Image (cartoon, rainbow, N blue to C red; front, side, top):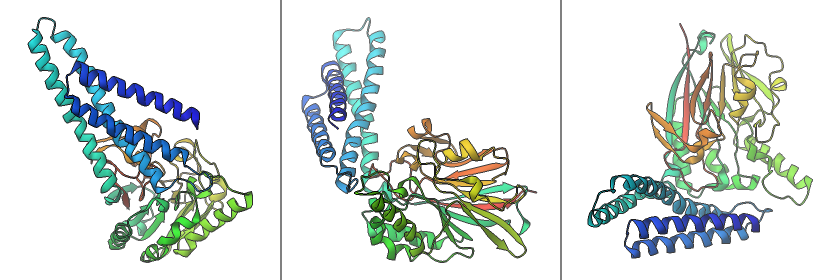
Length: 402
């Protein structure tokens, strides 16, 4: 921990030094603005350091720890953006100011400095909104997916998917109730939850049992799988038995809200004489727990069956599923949260730093005639907000290609 704080502190000091040199010495920003920003920066840093030192691995992250992360993001991101802007501006000015007078140069520097602050204000406002409102800005995202081998009886069949509750992070009961009401207003045939019901411990979900028991019944049921956080591997347990007991309790939560939890198994969904196969694997992640067993989960199924696979981590689709000879037509995942930070203009532009880690990180992706939907997540974790990547309720309508 000491090593981490020394490295983090060194980066923090370098960041402040660069900002000071560019903002005050080069671009002549008013000193009172700089000292105001610097004072907030040190408050955010000290609050974060306090949260790191008080972190108890036997308990896991607290709400105040999350807010420590939030304050640091609120400090670092706008400052990084303005530093990048000022560096580029400085390099440009080295060229354009060759023959300019001292007075002109000083005027340009002041203008660019103030413009830099204006640019930094955009992510600052965005992050404040994300911490305050964005994390509960639930969006219903509807998509149609076409399949040549979809049984005719399932043409128009609608699947509602949510993922990544992270119920230990919830801090507004009214907003969660609103989200449940929003789900209940959707007309879907099947409800699927793709993992991470808690951050770590089963008790996190206990205050929300009554709320989630208000989810309506869906014509073809409510099913779920486990995510990487559901195994209790991010805290220190007093014994292996305590860890296993927590895991069993987490699995029991699904039953308490009438979710049929699929742990490397499958179910048949029928409409008259027609049927599709629903498969649920335990977590399988390239960089996380690999408890998922696709072969076991698909026991009794054949290649020609139409299959809907629930697998929490989308890296499973990338590395095992999308080219599998058994032909899994549709996979539903979550896990990434879209990093809870990015820019989306529906149908035009989509970006988040998480895309440099996961090839499939938000929305629909295709390979041949197979699809994956990566749900952006219902809740939030670590950073107590969402900026540009909103909590999602997916509605996927299956259509028969003609």
